[in-house]
Length: 108
Length: 253
Image (cartoon, rainbow over all chains, first blue to last red; front, side):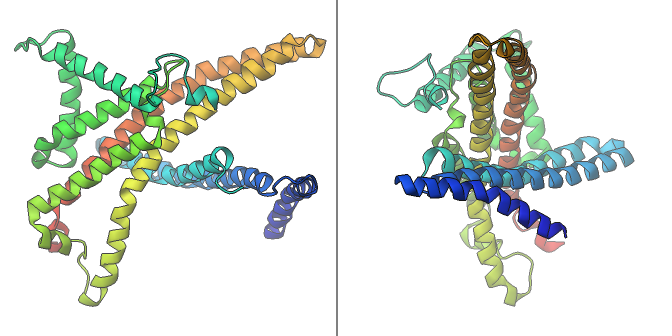
C-alpha cells in the first residue's frame, strides 16, 4: 500500500517534467534540462531525509551512552562527531551531484 | 551564482579568486606567526599567548588520538587546521569568497594528507610490511579480496575528505545567497517596493523576517559549520596518521 503510494507520488512528480519535456522538444529545446532539475531536487530530498534518519539514530545512541556514563562523555562526543561527519558526507555527495547537475550541466 | 563566484572586493587582476584568497590567508597566518614569535617570552602575552593556547589544543588532541608518537606531526596538522579554519571563516565575511569553497583547494589539502600518511606508514614499517598490513587479520584465502577492498577504501579517503569540505562550504554559500539575495532582498523586499498594497504588507513583513532569519540563524550556523568542518578534517587526518603509525597492532590481539 505504502509502496504503491510512493510510486504514485513519484509518477505524479514526473508528469510536469514530461509535459515540460514535450514542450521543450516541440520548441527545439533539450529535454535533459527539466529532468536534471527534477533529479537534483528529488535526489537531494531523498538523500537528506535518509541522512537525517541515520544521524538521528547515531545521536540518540550517543546521548544514551553519555547519560549512562557521564565520565566518558568527551570521548563519546568526539566519536559521535566523526561518525556524523562520515554519515553527512553521503548527503554531501548528493549535494555535489545536484550542484553539478544544476549549474555545470555536463549533459546537454 | 555570480556573487558567489566573483566577490566584489579583493580581486587580483588575472589571478583566479581562490588562489588570491589562499594568498590572503597565507599572508594573514604568516603575519600572525611572525608577530607572535618575534619576541618569544617565557611568560607569554598578547598574540603569543593566544597562539600558544591554540597550539596546545592541537597538541592535546594529537596526544589523545595518536599518542606520544604523534608529536612530530604537529606542524602539519596545526597548519592544515588553521588554514582550513581561516579559509572557512574568511568566506563568511560579506563580499569575500573563501578558498575552501573551491574543489582545487580542498583537493590539494586532501592529497597532501593522503601522501603524508602513506609516507609515514612506509617510513615506519618499511614498504613490504606496510603493504602486508592492508591484508588485515584474515585467513589466507581472504587476503586477496581484502587487499582490493582496503585499496578502494584508502583511495576513497581523499575523495571523501575533498568532497565533504567542498560540499559543506559551497552548499552553505549557495543557501546563504539564495535566502538573503533571491528570497529576501530580491524577492520579498522587491515585492514590497513594487507598489501593490498586498506586497507592501506581506512582502515587507516577509522580507524583514527572512533577513532576520538569515542573519540570526543561518549565519551563526555557518560559523559553527566552519569550526566543525575544520575540526573534522583535522580529526580524520589524525585518525589516518594514527592508523598508519600503529599498523600491525590490531593483528596481534
